[in-house]
Length: 290
Image (cartoon, rainbow, N blue to C red; front, top):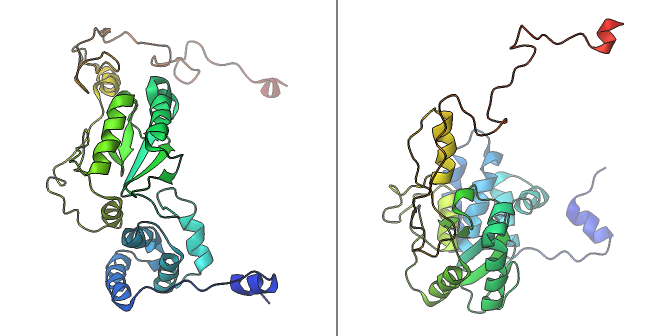
């Protein structure tokens, strides 16, 4: 006979406190939203990820109450919900700030200044990794690659991009966030709070003005590779990462313009193999020759 996790906890002498319940009006509202989310999927348990975003939008992090709610409406155990909530880093497990400020410290951003930015912000805000300022405005963390290497170093606020940052621009950014001044991402949709972001990620309409038309694109440095792959040879404009000029301003820089038959490296050139080069077929392996 199997025992539940709560039964195992009792048998081990572990205290099992019930998760506090949402107030009736909050639960009724969340249940209405949950039904809309669940209706999108042929299997109700597939709705777990957006439901976790939904409960995160309520309290700013995924609480035991929120996980209990998800388990109830989906017919899952709290252990199943907890396993998912603790796996994905986008779900916060403790109270956090209105603005999640993530500094990319993956390889390219780090060498371009990301490590220096992260260290400077820790000193400037008086917090460590994953900690929140006393006013509850900013949670600082280092994050991994955001697929924006040509804009390195990159800082993200509630997953909106702030490109080509410096120590000083990053300090000004968090100061503006804390004082309530309007902050505009380098590209993409207008900035909103973490709770509002969580509700959008749950799949509800984005009500921000201009959000529907907002978009982003790979930067010139990345598009050079696409241009070469297409055989195009027009000059490119490349953002110089550290020229002391205006923030994010594109600068003209000489770019090698290869001929259609030239390749920048051996990795780009097609390689002859036994399958593609009949004049030089591969010989039999040792086992085949025996």
